[in-house]
Length: 296
Ligand SMILES: Nc1ncnc2c1ncn2[C@@H]1O[C@H](COP(=O)(O)OP(=O)(O)OP(=O)(O)O)[C@@H](O)[C@H]1O
Ligand SMILES: [Mg+2]
Image (cartoon, rainbow, N blue to C red; front, side, top):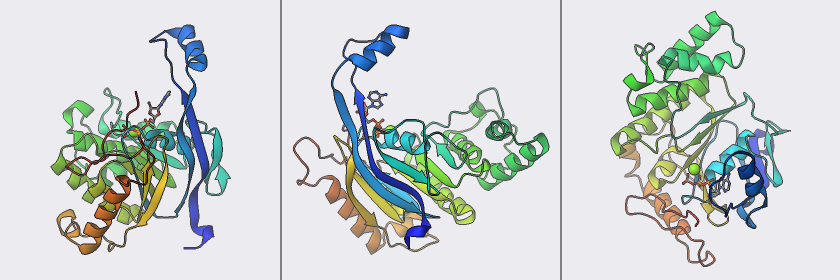
């Protein structure tokens, strides 16, 4: 791809937090304490990569390496100390409708039905009532929830709630979809089904997707490229191209392909590389999830 295909660009992103050491405080005391206590700890250092239009990029890294922080910076929810995020060639300074967000927990409003939850995302965009109703129904249908429009969140399974969250994000018509471990809370079977569903949905919507995960299989199965982050501080270890066919065959078939096995092993090795400075390499759990790097 050529440079003018770049839709999302991260250039030298750096972020640090100050650790609060005086225990929990409330209100004004907490605000002042968090700003003065503890030395700054770098969380992200010089994170640089591009995402091209309609590309599906996965970001993988150990727990605590800064993935959610990175997503928040990209969305404009958090400022970076260093570097620039550009979306469609413009620097990101605050959240916009051009970027949709899906988190691990759908965060649905419990007093609203599935339909009204999706409509909520459109209300905040100022879309008129009739149009809201139409667009929300269309997107619930897209995520396989036709017939469940009038169900409340507590009447839906975890997977169905995530579908509503996805419908809500897509209905707002973002250029880029940011997904932060959206299937992390689901059981293994539901998770795999949701991955297949997401691929199908993305075949029709053709969104640019940045998908954060700590699951190796998920990253390789879904993505065109996988950005491997090292931890403490979070930084790009390597970017791996995934040369698997699109539309991607069902998970069981794809996971037996030589390219899948090879890239999975490569990323596993990168995450465990002994080239990492002492105390920074992630560990990999037996199920293929990257281990915790949560700091003290
Ligand atoms: N508001 C904050 N103040 C201070 N430290 C923070 C803050 N937010 C995050 N951190 C620290 O930044 C580091 C990265 O956190 P982040 O949530 O981005 O990690 P992550 O890679 O998303 O982890 P996980 O895989 O567990 O979701 C952690 O060490 C965390 O403690
Ligand atoms: Mg996170």
